[in-house]
Length: 476
Image (cartoon, rainbow, N blue to C red; front, top):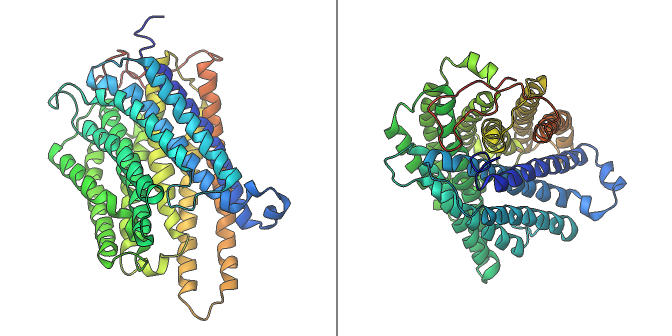
């Protein structure tokens, strides 16, 4: 094997992707256990160990799914993609490999500290201080490699993926570093700490994870469909709006809370404007996917990325709906808000990540996917599990909000309203976990060459160049 088959950075990408799979299984398992405890409170007594209490399982699962599954996986596929849309190969592969290992070590350290010692109590920062420092250090190493994906000039190659990549690379270290300094490095007043937690959570979701997902959408969808983005000006306007509005979206959840009224209004306005931005990007996505139903049926990578692209628009439209003054007071303290995070995390980012792995991993590891129904099981387990969970949470939030606003309904009866929805949510989360287990088995079997490759080895044959259209479909 030569360097073209395994270019520098491929080992780091493989470590990040495999780590992402491990953390996704563990994080989804902890989330399923936490939801089951809400449905059957007796489980909390049967499992007497304090590290399996609901107050530790929830932040541990959120940490694993955010930093471990999505963060690690998105960085892994970007390490494969970046040198191919910039035309500049990576250097210092061992340094990238060390950064990937450090990221996995940080996730493991954060998980053990949250389960054994308890979470920090900070929104979006359940991990201890030293874990955040390791994550920033690791990201600086990996991000320095990814900056080569920006290319030699802004005029060569696709512009939108580079702009979203630049936004994601800047937002994470600036946001996390500032949050750590203000929350744990200084004696900031309590009001400043609350505002900092909310703004960091916005940076984490809407200025780091979401842009990384959009990098993959606007690079891989044109490549897989053979079509170009039809309006660069609309795409640039959406990027500018994302930069300006993304940091304020978290404040919509604390409306009528202990933050200045102008920040509450800014959060509501930003959420509704981001709904318009999502519609704008949706028009670009519509042009890329229109008439490609048959291709999506044959191509599992295109299928996942298309679902993720439409889920991106759906998530921000739902956020705008939840921010409306007629619905926000009703759903403010209900599980209805969890429906947005379900769509945003699992259907948008999770689907884009899965499709990118299907499309890009064979490029760096030189193997093919099986022509197997297992790929279809993964797709339907992911989409049906996440979609059903989001629908149940939204309906449960509506019933819960109406009951909370009715003085004639006692608090004790709220559990009876939520119980059937929680039962369906537990089943749906188990379905998603089953799909992820199937995907992990197929990936490991492919890496170990346990089956003859029946599908094409890669979407892109040239290890350093991504062509404007897919070479062959990935069957599934």
